[in-house]
Image 1 (tube, one colour):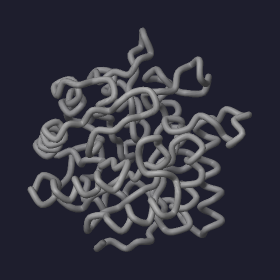
Image 2 (cartoon, rainbow, N blue to C red):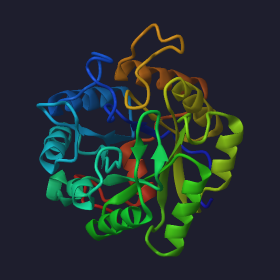
Image 3 (spheres, rainbow, N blue to C red):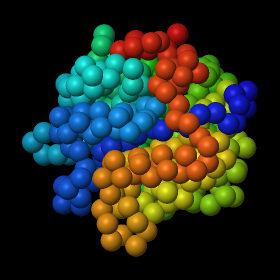
Length: 290
């Protein structure tokens, strides 16, 4: 990789996700106002970027509504215009390209800096995320046309290989940012062997962060912090503070633990402005990438 392996700690904050409900935990932010409040509180603790999911106000189910994303982004940017904001284009609940791509239509100060691009289909415990090759390529092309940087998501080494294929085709341009996700039942497991293989296979000029599903979150976050990488952390991936599952976490709990681990490892948190510089994102209000 052209970029240095060790740099300031990227903290990618994932406050909501698609799975947690109020029945599972009272702490998950679901409404636009709740998500904004959690993100602004996280900014005070210290984060680099935010990976946003939107929920329907009536049903609390995931939505790709541009209007809901607009309310979230406007609320955050009013007080924290420097934060790098990404939106989810997940294939768990939505199969039509137009619906998945709807948040990419936002413009001006409501335009996201980044959008997620899961690089292949995969199975979760109870459902599949369908990301056919044509869908992945259409989403990548739509992001390129809108000047929105892909937030690449790889759940196993094969997905990294597919990213390299898209790079060779000119559909992804450096520098890149990739979340490496471990511990899902049908994908790379949360151990050093899987982590090492995926790091070895990363494309050139790529920033990266480790995420762990459920109990694997603190394990993979800890490994990433110790070896110089970034972390993805939040209630999207894990609602429990402890592996015994006796205490439900808040997003603030999870972030403060990351800061404790970062301090123990001598890692400063990367400011959003530095992340923007490394990924060549324009300053302020999501006007895309140069």
